[in-house]
Image (cartoon, rainbow, N blue to C red; front, side, top):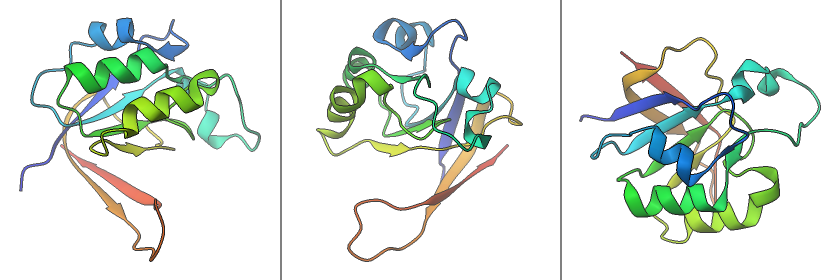
Length: 140
């Protein structure tokens, strides 16, 4: 089964993934799984003990643009939330309201080249849970 996924680099001068940023990434139609590497990776936020509320995540308009203009069904990010701190509720609502998009958070993307991969996310089976830790595997 073919599971193409795309790892993209978000411009490092952006502190949110907005509609403007999404449009600039030129994600091809038909791509359903996208991992977004941001300055969170450059700053090593996934390796720090303390939470950093200045992390890069989706704004509400970026989430809305993704839902309305792409075929994406899996969104992966390089920190603990897919949504920017000051857009936590609104960005999550935009992404999750159709119940068709799966957020994958907390990815460590520092030693992976941007590009197309065979992607599979392997969840732990947790009875009665609404989410699960996953191991996301990329193969070239």
